[in-house]
Length: 276
Length: 189
Image 1: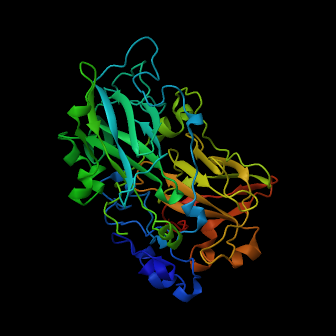
Image 2 (image 1 turned 90 degrees about the vertical axis):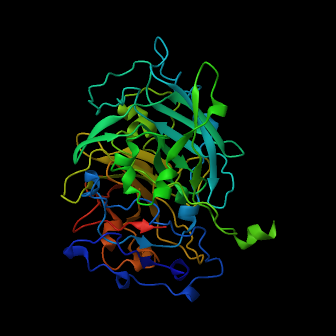
Image 3 (image 1 turned 90 degrees about the horizontal axis):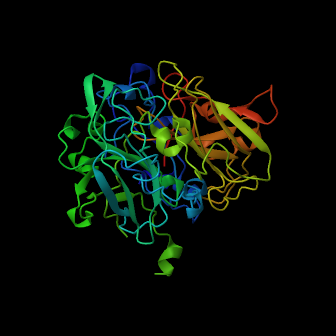
């Protein structure tokens, strides 16, 4: 496999313009497998770039000038990528995981109260403990509390759209919030984002870093959204849809949604195997 | 062991990423946030890295969020989140700024030292999956000449080098180009 022998350039997923089309695999020096010592097995296999959205997805206008045209350079992981920051509970405020409470001024936020929970696993189905999950979202009217958002829907003085939580020993996480509203955004003609919540995730390795968004089961806007459709495989899109989770609903209080998360998995090293 | 699950697909961080990752920048007062543009690393040589991010039209990107992760001055990765920092590109000027120490050498896969470097990740509206690059230092010519990653790059190597700022001690400039003639080298790891 390519990563065993060191570097290779990934062919751009979409045709590139003439000026950069010359970038091909031979641009880069390939390291020979025998140049790599016994500990050379990479800890992470490369991401499946056909499963993730491509960089250039022209239906999503903003990607057109912000996507590289050169091939990505594939390289093995070293300690710089297999290590990563560790975030402890010491950085947490009392209500970080309760977005119904963490910005209250004089009352409860407006909107549908929901509990979002799920489990963080890796690609080998191992629970991921201690994963920092940072959350942001619009309010029930589709307005962000952000100095740069001028959408006409009103702000909710009791809701910030900021939250964070950390996964437990079994990889479970949970936070409480309101269901965000859809909102328009500038794209090709009128475009509306389906209701969504943004998540930022830190595994144990910086190589696992991931930012994503999840949507809500049954929302008819999902299939019309150019940002969702940047993901080409319908099975991958399904993985971005949180499911109604009535078993976890809080009676006469909050509905519940479930969203499970998978981070990249670190390959087992020979040393790990000896301890199995 | 075989992989049994597919990774959750990436989605863009969007223009309001600051709410979740740098709430103070969005205008939200959060106590105990604890993450900012300083890596918290002591020892070693204190340095400042500034720069801008440009798009394919050469325009400065003013809604990006950048993260670095690096070893300390001895090449060791520290405890907690020391070595990690996050900042945004300024809404008016587009400039970002990190305060840290110059990293020491970190071992490559064969045990040999890599040249001093930090990992840089870039998130923004229009970036569907974050971009991953490295910041090396132009004033580490000997170490750079022996670095396995830099030596794998024959076209665009200079895009990975932070340049010493001659007007200010221990300051470096690192401009990123997302697309175009000076396009930064991005990695798939």
